[in-house]
Amino acid sequence: MTAVSLPHPTAPTVTVRYFAGARAAAGVDTETCAAGTLEELVGRIVETHGERLERVLTACSFLVDGTQTRDRALQLAPGAVVDVLPPFAGG
Image 1 (cartoon, helix red, strand yellow):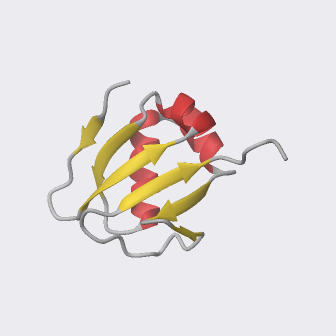
Image 2 (cartoon, helix red, strand yellow):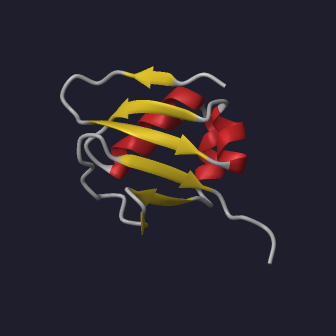
């Protein structure tokens, strides 16, 4: 799958990596996006990819530079990597 770039003039650019059902809903593995906070990032990717991804995101957790967070107000640093992880089945 190809990566998509989402421009925004003032916010830092971050890399978004989608896994499993989030990847299927987004239609891409990885993309770059400009967003200042995790909440802003979520809004931008939903705006780009639509309702299907929005539904999946309600169950997803996020890793920002390898650290799990649920804090949507978290400030994103330039070059941050945000992993979008839906719940995984298995044991």
